[in-house]
Amino acid sequence: MGETDSFFSNKSAKIFVAGHRGLVGSAIVRKLQSLGFTNLLLRTHADLDLTRQSDVESFFADEKPHYVVLAAAKVGGIHANNTYPADFIAINLQIQTNVIDSSYRHGVKKILFLGSSCIYPKFAPQPIPENALLSGPLEPTNEWYAVAKIAGIKMCQAYRIQHGFDAISAMPTNLYGPNDNFHPENSHVLPALMRRFHKAKVEGAKEVVVWGTGSPLREFLHVDDLADAVVFLLGNYSGLEHVNVGSGKEVTIKELAELVKEVVGFEGELVWDSSKPDGTPRKLMDSSKLASLGWNAKISLKDGLIDTYKWYLENVKQ
Ligand SMILES: NC(=O)C1=CN([C@@H]2O[C@H](COP(=O)(O)OP(=O)(O)OC[C@H]3O[C@@H](n4cnc5c(N)ncnc54)[C@H](OP(=O)(O)O)[C@@H]3O)[C@@H](O)[C@H]2O)C=CC1
Ligand SMILES: C[C@H]1O[C@H](OP(=O)(O)OP(=O)(O)OC[C@H]2O[C@@H](n3cnc4c(=O)[nH]c(N)nc43)[C@H](O)[C@@H]2O)[C@@H](O)[C@@H](O)C1=O
Image 1 (cartoon, rainbow, N blue to C red):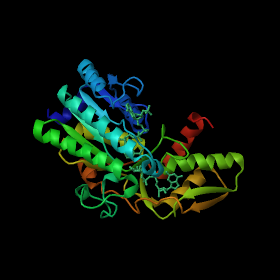
Image 2 (image 1 turned 135 degrees about the vertical axis):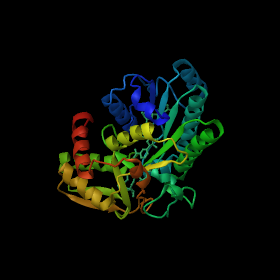
Image 3 (image 1 turned 180 degrees about the horizontal axis):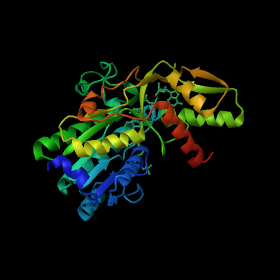
């Protein structure tokens, strides 16, 4: 049995899912549980602050997890990235450095680090292949976060090269789904619009403001698809290069806004606030490497939106 087969064969392996209450971490926990994994190691931010090196070190020394999925990070949309650059670079560098290094030093068999499609240059070739990394200047609204994420990829590569540590990196496109952050300003576009359209519908408002020009293109992936891909990579990939994880489908922000409006059932008008930044004009990832390994996304944007709105109505205080 090869090294990559062993992940699925031991359902009692101790797996530390860092960030298990977030959008991504919670979906990975659901996926692992549905596959029968019984020994998940979970710590809230309050229980274990991953920016604290000595606490992380003690945690790994005590618990000795077999596998680690690093889904804890300082995360936010275009406004948060643009407003809190120091937090985005410092917190992410601290978390990933502590977790990757302690994982290596305490005998973790494999770690999966989560980056983001914002690692690529603002004007990367489309669809963006993995080898476009570091081939041009970054998008200014999120370059601080992107630099931290690039450092995470490079740290995984360095530990593999120098120590033979099985550290892999997955680069998801824009994600959405249950447990997303629906904050009015600091969230990503999809949850922000869902909340705004819902509020407008309930209050009988005539207009909803949407940021930017509506022309940027984005690729969206439901977080349950991402969780499926993460588990697939844990079982099937042990390479040096990071792996793109996308749906292969892109929409303009205007098309997204119209679709969210339809799913929520808001009947008023859209008003565009062009004083807000558009960010990267287009970032469709080339996910053919992952497809060649045998994985493809399954959930359509429309179905994913319907599922997410249902979750929002049942779980988010209105
Ligand atoms: N959302 C998206 O569209 C995308 C996300 N990604 C990546 O996926 C990963 C997860 O993102 P997502 O799930 O969206 O983010 P969330 O904000 O939903 O979740 C992040 C989790 O990390 C925890 N966390 C943050 N700081 C610390 C800390 N210092 N110590 C311990 N835990 C901490 C948070 O806990 P608490 O809330 O209590 O602070 C939260 O549970 C990130 O690496 C992100 O870059 C990649 C591409 C797109
Ligand atoms: C995942 C990814 O997410 C971020 O990059 P982004 O794709 O630019 O993210 P976003 O979802 O915030 O915006 C997408 C587009 O949508 C427009 N937009 C309209 N109306 C709203 C709105 O109400 N809120 C937000 N946030 N955006 C809006 C907005 O102006 C922009 O044109 C980075 O964190 C980056 O680091 C990263 O990794």
